Length: 355
Image (cartoon, rainbow, N blue to C red; front, side):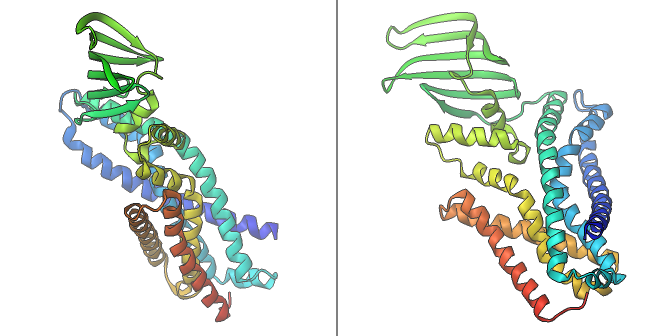
């Protein structure tokens, strides 16, 4: 049993690595082509482009690895089915149910390991890539004015240059439900705490203005750094830990944050999603896929992956529209495919497909 388990695992990992290498290469090539137009703009050079691509590798790997797992399983186990290796495995008392159970267990552990590793690297380097690109192109991270509410403060930031550098900031302080002061600053820089330059403070009660060259605020009185950073980061670039901090922060100030909750639960449950798409594909692998070639298996794998994530997005968005809690929306989207996979699995067993 152990020999069979590790033999299948070896085949699975080889198939996954081949699929991941191709998908990652294609993904990065597309990014490279799309970024060529920026070369020569301000300080954006070919070296900047190369560094940008390198920094995006962890995030691109995180994006493609569920598809790579699916395609890898179709390649590896499809090849085993084609060469009748499962018949030999069946002769050792390991039937369809046990075989699929082994594959699902392997998928879960591989995807869990990859999720932990990729999520620890991807957000950091993808945000660095975005900051480096924007600095080279001499533009801010966002052109939109951002508003925040934290404690007794309402904060407006008109320009975010990098994740630690702000411009044109206004801070309104509320005491006992009334506006007590307004602080405006030309620049803000984060270094453990927030430091502001060219500050003007208007005291509402006395109508007196105070000008200061420098002024500091601890992060608990301004926007927590990670919360600010997440406002202009793409949701997929935000780490699980920072998503959780964002959700807690917004819950405290009674602001709904359902979109980020959906992303949070999708990231947490990504290994389960990988297991589901592989589980749904396996019945086809043991039946019609036995006589197909590798290219057909890859096409089926890609189609299953795209179908799963498209339907998952549709169901979770419907859940948000219907005010269904984010966690339940994500579970519902998974449940649709689990039901479909269970139906196919039972159909496979009922027909007593020889393997």
